Image 1 (tube, helix red, strand yellow):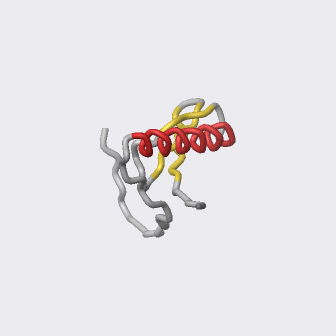
Image 2 (image 1 turned 120 degrees about the horizontal axis):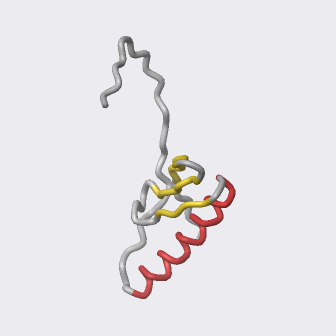
Amino acid sequence: MLRSYTVKYTKIGSVYMGQLIEWPEVVTEGKDIEDCRAMIRDAIHEMILAYQQQKKEIPLGGCLIEQVPVEVDNVYQTA
């Protein structure tokens, strides 16, 4: 069965962190975005195996993330 998951990538210093939206426990990092993609796939496979061994329900994928542009005036950044 093919499932799709939504990954949030964040650049942290010189590396990328990848975390699943639908399954936040699945998180990893890579030296670049392609490395992070490979690492997140591996992390998903490992978590699926662990959940199956523990007879836990595997979270469903298929989340839809959308960026919504909003014009904001006078935005101040806090320290």
